Length: 371
Image 1 (cartoon, rainbow, N blue to C red):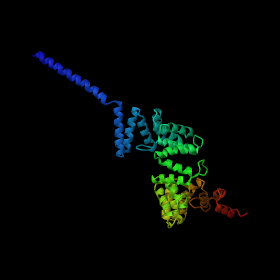
Image 2 (image 1 turned 180 degrees about the horizontal axis):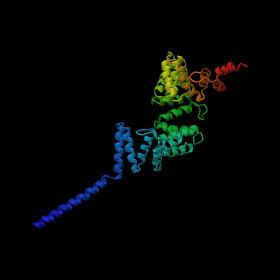
Image 3 (image 1 turned 60 degrees about the vertical axis):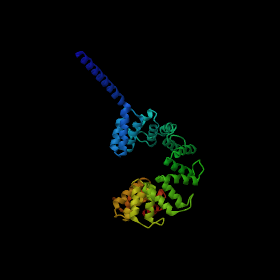
Image 4 (image 1 turned 90 degrees about the vertical axis):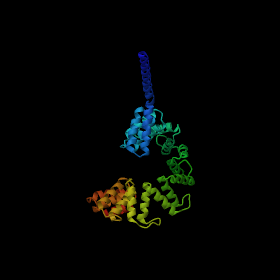
């Protein structure tokens, strides 16, 4: 009897041991590197849906431990756009490059983008075009767009509008909204080797505008205001300008501000609204908006008069070479508006503005030097 119990106990022990070994094997099977990577990616995607940017960044940072090109691309985008972490183009470039080394087409595009804009690496047209071409050969739409821009702007390759259109049309076929806009610029450009086709330009701008692309909305407004390629319609032009301004386009913001400042396009004078829109554009370094903002502060129109602020905005406009801004900077120096009066600096500004064709600056010089 004792022997039977012994045999049974041994059998149970063996079964338990076998189960333990199997469990260990099963555990190893269930928690491979790929499983861990998939878990990190799922958690990152979950955090993304919850709009928890710091968590998204943390999970993708964990995921790159498994050398996943997709994880490197995702982490690179976090660094490139400052999503969940501080913006760092150098780290973004590193991540894109690690993905590109493994043949990932999005990583290749990311490396090209860094070279195109000089972000995280020295700007280099040949490198940008080269990486875009590699990615585009694998059918990546944004790379087609980037390569089209290289041919359009003669960056890293010789300018070739025919090739630019070829690549941009591929991108547009995949609904890359920027491609529609670029095609529009080519078809209305008289210096292009592609024949001017106003109807095509309008059509491409319209497609981009319908997708809420601000630059295209602004250009569409200009077409409607001038009646170019379409029946003139100022009311619709105004709507296009406003949409573009609200979507952050600096040229549109300046134009809307200008309408309010001068009472154009059947818009009533409204200095407060003019000030608001000029400020939006000026913050984006728009030289004409900065000049008009200087006028508003100098004259106390829509805002409390402030000579120091006027001088500051005229200075910013002048630094970009805008002749009216240079002239009014001279006026500030001449009269001591917001700055210590300095006749020599005033004269220097007037001469610069006069050389740029500003008639009032020439008049000031004639008054200061009558002989």
